[in-house]
Length: 163
Image 1 (tube, one colour):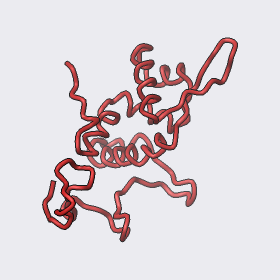
Image 2 (cartoon, one colour):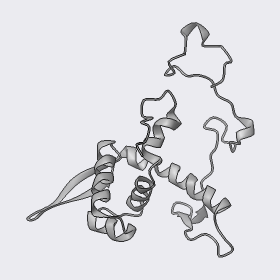
Image 3 (cartoon, rainbow, N blue to C red):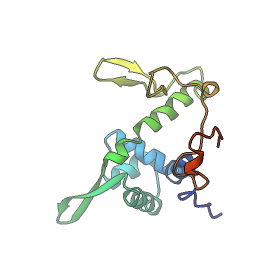
Image 4 (cartoon, helix red, strand yellow):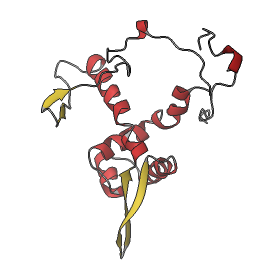
């Protein structure tokens, strides 16, 4: 089944699904966050087929989340390193982990505990307002069309229309 390309839709969530909507991409990013860099190590840690792995790594390089860097010339070998864009995906995966810890963990408990090295405490991701720092809840949020939406009009900048 062919997937609908949402990369040009006037919605940043729809655009992000082109990367985060593929479970292999998410798991490859997770492994990169854990320090995995080499093709064989990705393959071994995930049990992913070579063809699928090649395709997904190439896509993450194409999309600018990973960069392919030569680490050996005879024979030629490469590793995959996170770019700034790739590192910026970390909060997305941490939010997914926090959601799964709340809704998908059984009585045995969470399989991974994340530690904040700066303060030495365990943590979970939390979405907070970038202005006031308070936790953000769905019931306390709203939205309006931004300048990148095709229906946005300059004369309607103060319009209270919601997407």
